Image 1 (cartoon, helix red, strand yellow):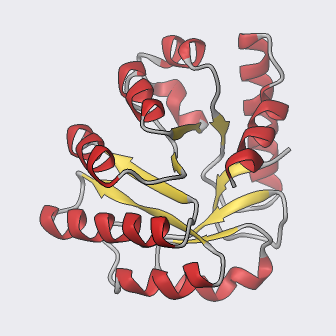
Image 2 (spheres, rainbow, N blue to C red):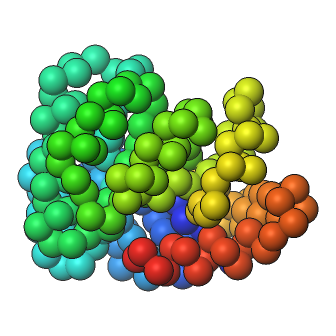
Amino acid sequence: MFDSHCHIGIKSNKGYVCTSKIEEYTFSSNFKYFSCGLLPGEEGDISLLEEWSKKGFGIGEVGLDRRFGEKEKQIKRFILAIKIAKKYDALLTIHAVGMTDLLLSILKEEKPRRFIVHSFSSSTEVAKEIMKLGGVISLSPNVEKTKHFNSLVSSLPYFLTETDLPTGEEEEKVLKEWNKKLSIMLERDIEKESEELFFKIF
């Protein structure tokens, strides 16, 4: 069992730990799979991600969020993060809340090589557009709250599963239940599919 998107909790090798602020990078030695990011709304120099990418770390989570202002600043930081990921062939984890048209426009223009759109909650049509651009969709239990949950999961040929929680006992419990629910619903071994998919793109 592998969590495709989690956060800093107890030491773990069972998940891809993504960060949202620069001061979290010092915890990297506690995790085998670790990614350095900077979310909209967090202060810091996005160019610092280059130093970590040189060391082999992934980039993420980075992206766009309608809940925060400074749209142009968000765009500039997101594009620079994509360019750094491409330069070092780093796996890019994208945080996207709203701003869907802008997200797709930037992805089409910048063409990241390997990327995940985590905790995806938009429409099936948007998911398919992202996949056409080479991206992978990751689903957390939060997607169940959306009106298109059933059509989305039944339409996607593949996807990752995640918790978006700090690593630990609760995170592992949530992921196990989430994988089980999706496996029953789709009559497929989602836990196995998700783990295999993650390490195929990692």
